[in-house]
Image (cartoon, helix red, strand yellow):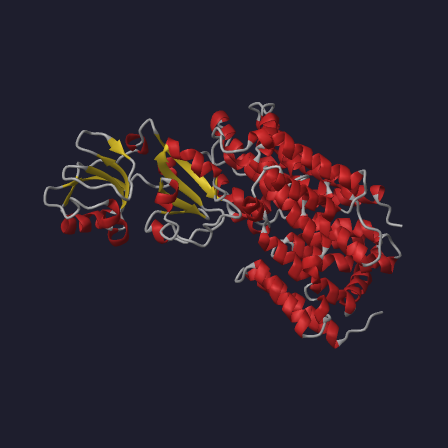
Length: 595
């Protein structure tokens, strides 16, 4: 029995501090990981020469290479093409549509990152909801959960799978090959899909879509004002007018003297007699009327359809996972000049923001209501900063490169499975080929990488080394076995899965794997069992973040479009975790005998 020591106490304190920081969300997860790296090094828990070993770890290399290959599949449209073909068989039945959505997202997420698979199907799901009348709230949680479930089917489906194999081989134990994850992954995926179709969909909220103007509470905010002869606005451009910065009035349309409607542009020169359609509060309108010389037109509130011409469009766009706009304001990004669209409202965490939009710092998952010319739509759609919440003909993808991207993915699989090439090397070859063949540019390759995940994994790996070298993993494993070992190895396996599935909610799935996998390995060794099924239980538990929206980026991405509340995830996700636990206890020992 491993005795408690100061080194074990220090390691446990660092683990506790990291979990608290992850749960508080006061710092970015990659910053927390780097703080962990610094802590275990400065306290002497690991040798300084090991501090940055995580950045050269094959698991980290595989993860960033997978992001580039996924980016190639996305930029060439092959992922969208596959998604479209799958949705053609969906029909109008709610149960069938959920099954098809989950099948498509699950299959894609087995070979590309989870958030990418969710992003592919999100606009199509919105379009189908509008066409069939099935509430979007019935479709998007199943879509998100399917991307998490599908990632369990191959080694590259999710970072925990890559980490699991690496952690095993680092201990001198047999690792896991590319499709070793598939048998249990398929059971988990099919169990999840059956649960969602038969039970879960009845637990989902049924929130009918509102008229877009009602949903964003715009009806009381749109008004017409006329520029008078002596107005201070006459002869000034929109940029010079300071209507937004000084009066919090957003010009969404301009009607000239010949009754032609124009999309606002910063260089538009105001003339007496022009009518401005503005969004703002009555008190701000009255303040502007007094000081600028404008007249508020007849008392009627405008509909969006009244100010949207044939060549104009009003769209919803959600901020993408790796958007360059995250943390910035519309003013800082020169949004209207850059994209040609005017922001009318921002939907965030169930509330609508209508005032001083140009000064609101954007967050991942925000939905922006935008209005602009249809001709500007392709530029908005091709941007890596947004996902449009409606299907639009996509001319921005390099569709002629789609066969190349598909061929590169098949080559990577062949190198791994047939030639037995290390997965890290095979994925780097695939990433380089994606760039060399023009499937995506080098800049796009860098942008496709989720650098936060890369630094998170590289920063947390030294904690795993510290847990091993100080005996902390063995200490915790022995206590776990002592607690539930009398109930048998299946009870220990269940405990490992439950621990991983709970701890992944406040922290990332990769960090949870780094933390729990070393414990599971020592648990298995202390029982004289094969460590691989115990590690598989860890990665499945860590990858199934169903209880909260903050457990995974896919959950956050669908929260606002689906109109979900925090508790909606728990209501549907808790029974799903129980179903998966039962499936794992039945099937995992069949595929991977414990002894």
